[in-house]
Image (cartoon, rainbow, N blue to C red):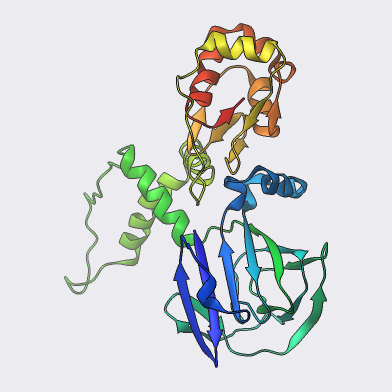
Length: 322
């Protein structure tokens, strides 16, 4: 996903990639923004690794922006944490206080806020990092040709959670119990829906969410899915389990695909929306914890044909590669 944002005389333009030429843009007032570069480019994926001091499930992707002097996307809000790393060039950043702010769209694909008073007003130089919490208005404009790296965090809202859980319920045909009221309470008017009836209906819905195993299974599948496309390239021909075994035993390194989300909830491990089943807990922990894996990480699990078959399936899905 890429966007080209430009402005001239207060008028904003947004176009979506892929782009073949930038010759028409001039030398000022435009920015190119590319999402999830860490999914496609290994050196940028390495830039994400220091942020694993924070929970993997909260980290989303790395956005890279290239801006010419005056380039930026205007004053705006993000509803998630972001770390902005200055790569090349200089950029001026202004951050305001977290207040209720009116948002508007100077272009259908661009959401901005009104001008604000800055509590941070700094020029970032190469190597500088700026952290902006959710809800703080901010704007950045390049002072010269500049490259910025933005590490964004994932913050699902209630609407996403309810929608995702509803999909899980429908796919598994859960919640088949029907409402019943063998003792219909009397009411003053037949049009009334009584408070105790509302309570009972709400309890029916909450009963599904309050099933820990289903909730865990759903959330593991939901949160381990990437919001952006992955550079999945299944090997051709596919690996056989014994080939995986031989490669690891010969010292080859198995590397996780950039941007693949591998998360652990309790004793269960999930990758890209799929639960990975195996009784070999240390080996599953290694899959979740390490970007690069060797035979030593898997230990005795490599001697189990069922584990090797599972590992071969993951490699043949394009999730890990040699």
